[in-house]
Amino acid sequence: METQDFEKKLSEMTKPEMPQLKHENMLANAIINARDKSVVSWWWLSVPVFIILMLMMKSTFMPVTTLISNMHELESSQKYMSLIFFLISPVVLIIINVASIRKIYLLSGSPKSFHFLGSAWFNILIISVSILILIIYSL
Amino acid sequence: MDETDLLNRIRHHPENFSEVFSLYYQQIFGYIIRRTGSFDDTADIAADTFLKAFRNINNFRYTGISVKVWLYRIATNEVNLYFRHKQKHNSVFERMDIEDNTIFKNYIADDRIEIESELRRHEQFLSVQKELKTLPVKYQEVIALRYFEGKENKEIVEILNINEGTLKSLLSRGLEKLRQKCNQF
Image 1: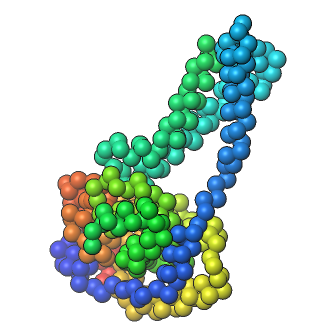
Image 2: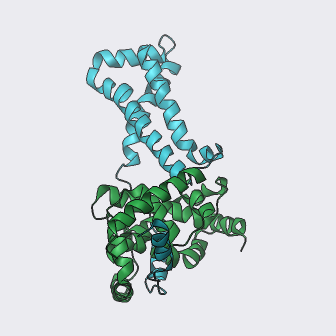
Image 3: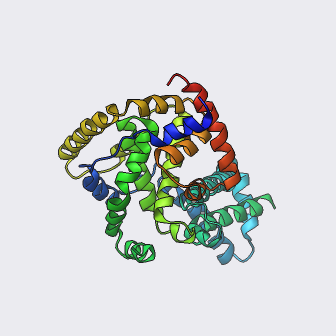
C-alpha cells in the first residue's frame, strides 16, 4: 500500500465521537472546589526560617556579634543541626523551587516572555534566600 | 467569544472556569480516548488536565496561544507521560472531594457504557490505534492530532511547540512506520 493511499485511508476512516458526558458538570464543580493537598507541609519551612530569624535578631541586638559569627557559633555547638539548616535545607529548597518554576513554565504553555516569572515570585524569593544562606554559611 | 474577557472573569471569580469545561471538556476527552483507548485512564487524564489548567490559568495569559491549544498541549503532555511510564495513571478523583460520590460514580458508569459501545463501532480505527500505540510518542502525537483530530499543521505546531519542518518530518516518518505495521488492511 502506498503511503498516500494509506494517508487517505486514515483521513477517511470513521473515528469514535464523544457524546455529551454526564459526569462533566460534577467534575467541573469538584475541580473548582479542589484544594491543593501538598505532601510538603509549609510548617516544616518555618523551622529553618525561625533559626535564621533568631540568628539575625541576635546579631542585631548583640553588638559584638555578626550573622556569620553566630552561624559559626551554632555550627561549633550543633554541627549536624547547622548542616541541616544551612546546607541541606537550602539545597533541597533550591531543587524543589527550580522544579516548581519549571512546572509553572510548562503548564503556562511555555511562554516566550519572562512575564510569567511574576507568577513564580515566591519560588524565586525562596531560591534567592537559600542562595544567600549558602553564601553566608560558606564564608 | 473573547478569551481575554473569559480569563479576566475567571481571575476574579474562579467558578467561571466551568465555562472552559463546557467549551472544551468533551473535545479534550475525545482526543485523550482516541489516543489511549481506555475509558478509565482517559477519565483520569482528562480530570488531571483540567485540574492543572484550573490551577495555572492565571499564568496562561502571557503565552499568546488560545485556551483550546493550551488545553491540547497539557493533555498531550499528560498522555505522553502515561505512555512513557506505561502504567496506570494515578487517579485524580482520589485527590478531590466529589460532592455526591455515588451519583458521580453512576454518571461515570453510564458514560463508560456509552463510550465503550461507540469505540466498538469503529473497528478499523481501533486496529490503527492499537498499532499507533506501539510507535514512539513523538510519532503518536503528530499522527493522532493530524488524522484522528483532523488538525491543520498550523494548529499542531502550536500545540506541540515545534516548527513546521520538524512536524512534516515526524509525520512522514511516523506514517511510513504506521503503514508498515498496518499493511494487513
